Length: 456
Image (cartoon, rainbow, N blue to C red; front, top):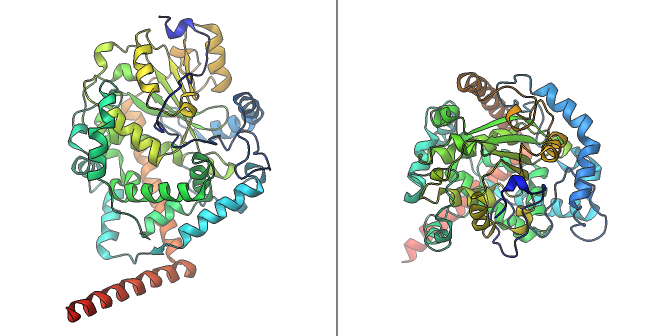
């Protein structure tokens, strides 16, 4: 069996089977919105080919790289969040991103979301939100209480027992299914009041409004319970000591990059590892220039130092794959797996059975010892963000104290900006009408229940 570094760089998408796992959901038309403009015919347009996407990325490279480098001012930390810009609406986004039919689909999904009433904020929910943003309530403790028992001792890269996930884990999932969302809380409104987000769900589900709407409601229910936006640095800073996951810069198309270093992971860790991934993905998304239609991330998975003994005997990876697939649908633009050992082929064959073929096509196996592969990486990633150990010019390694000093500053700034954005939303009369509608519905429900009790 040939080692990955002996092959030409090629998509790892030659699988004939696969579930809808691994960031793609039901991907009948998944394509990056930052690639070529969609076709104007048909309800979903024709997804661009990989060659077209590469050409579009090259065309964008100059502007995207310049903008990204100017924002990633501190090279020892991840790029900061964009605080001043509101959530994108269709009228704010570049007109070339969507065909008229696709815009109509976004507007239809927006109407469905706007039909949800808004819950009046209670003093308890307000104080809880502030406590979580300030680190007063550990999101890891929340996750430990909510996550299935099987995730309590686990690692982000544990694919060894993945086949068993399809039976017992799905039963666990049904038991732990969040309650269906029928109204919105203010913080949820802040997240979903975003047409680029809606377009990503539509894109992921082939521009099928009904399917995208169902999954969006499931994600809202999940976020209500898991609260990934409230995971704070204090929740994950200890598990981050290993330096196995961190953010660094942008690729040539302006998509935020997340480095994974499985060789630094001992293979046994707590559910806080899962929290660390969610924290990092949330923070990476916050750094994207969404007004330019950028809504995807790039993963660079560097296998230097990784050994077969680091495949733990647990299945938390299927938990995180399921979460990323369902609740961060189509966030992954590309994943570069660098210097994977030859025996990783067997692991990948197992994993590829559980990811959608469209997701598998986003995965490239590359080697830092192959000049063509290094050239491919340097073309897609500015050398200043590509670490020298894999062919780039970035000499910096992960420095825990410096990285988390910057993370804490950025998180505090983001929390302040989020509170201000919430206050602006709450001052809008159109939204207050939805609150009053929710209160009226609640009062009617109480009256009907009391009338039923009297009749009984």
